Length: 183
Image (cartoon, rainbow, N blue to C red; front, side, top):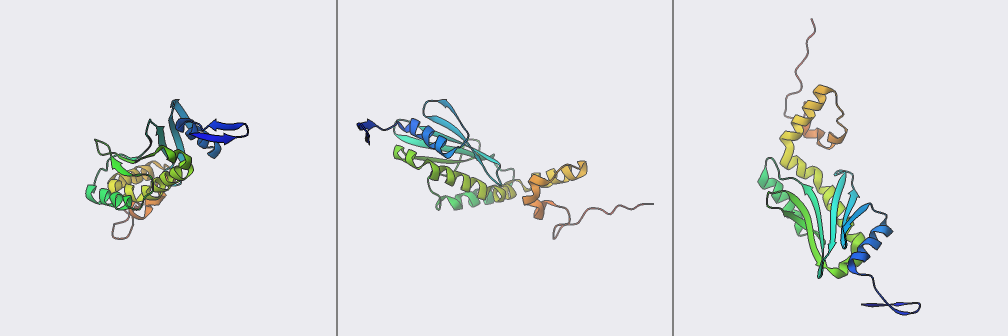
């Protein structure tokens, strides 16, 4: 492909180089371990960091971001929740690896390297907006155990507050903490 520069036609950057230029322009932290491959850190509110690969190969742009490990429980509802979102998503979709861990993945034409801002915005939005609900569906028992352990040890509950409505003792329909009697 040729562009038009001040001194006439000039070659456009390769897709791999275009990704790096876009990431620099967006001021996002990334690593570039090999030509055409970028690991980008997307900071979120619910999921604190979504590590996202952007890889330009010969014919396409691969986007891949780890979402969460396979659920401990409630598998059908967990996967139904995520799959129900796939039809409304741009550029990426929820998918499983061979052990059942969940990723956001997409394979797009190389021309999508010109749309890096939108693609990464979608990855961050889908990861961040669906994270708490997915954890609630697939890891509720573990979250309750973690909540109880932290309370017992006096540890911070700050990053568990999104789950307080079901993890905190005394929630509706659940018994509260045992009364402590003093002599």
